Length: 259
Image 1 (cartoon, rainbow, N blue to C red):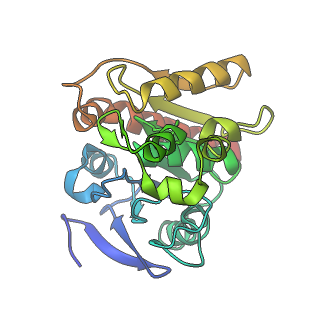
Image 2 (cartoon, rainbow, N blue to C red):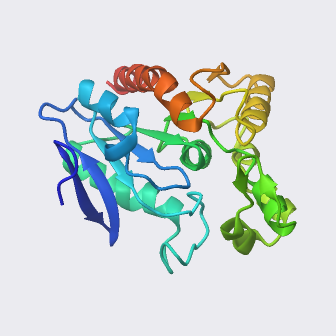
């Protein structure tokens, strides 16, 4: 199924994955791009897609719906495989098969829900995904559970009934957020995240993550600047070049380290 230019929709372990294959791809490198709650295709809407094309970066963008990229069974996605395991196993294997990516050759990059997913998965699997970048990561997803329990809005969105069904209460959800998966001695070597101070769903959690990483002495790059018109799309477009440059430099560093 054709999308844009070199983008196609493929099947990976029974689920849709958008694939970008450059005409002259960088050897042994790829991005796994994790979508936000709206699940829009990166090929159709994202400046990340255009930048990947410009820099010859292969991209695999799996679709998992409103799954929050968790290591929990989300029935609407798959009754047997968790969204996290789908990324760690099936999508990563697909990248290796198509593009020859070995250890340190894949970067996780996500926006919003996908941003927290990229961070959370890399914290849980830092040797598998030592490069991670997140735009407007919704780190404090337990607040969406709290809002759903009260049938209230959370920022510019409603609470999240999917998360409420998975966790049942706010504290169980909080215990599974990205911040609680940071290990003081085992972390991804290359971390980058950005959040607009005007983004009520992302900024506080990103700041707290920045503070925890700093307190533990874990190297990372955090960008907290109001860019664009305050919308998630405008902020993504404004910081995407920074994210892609970070990914390219980090993948280069990993390549030299493993040479």
